[in-house]
Image (cartoon, rainbow, N blue to C red; front, side):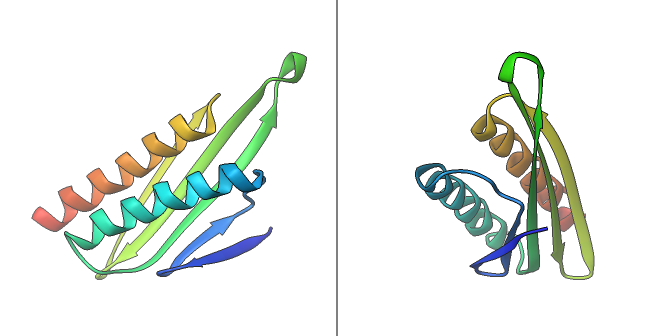
Length: 104
């Protein structure tokens, strides 16, 4: 399991993308982290990626996220054929969880 901290208490796990794709991923996650900070300070955000090979060379991307904030936790999981669409959906779910739990 290859972990890489990208700052701001954000850890990426098993991301196997090229340089340009990683730039986009970091920006997407960084933007989400800033939105989360509008609601609450978080202690740790971990995002994990798995790639599953399908028939005829097609890839399926699986993303899992875990966010620890206050004394709470938010988790999300998605799968998709496009890594950026799947990651965007994952980050939207995490942000939605935070909004919901902070407003309670």
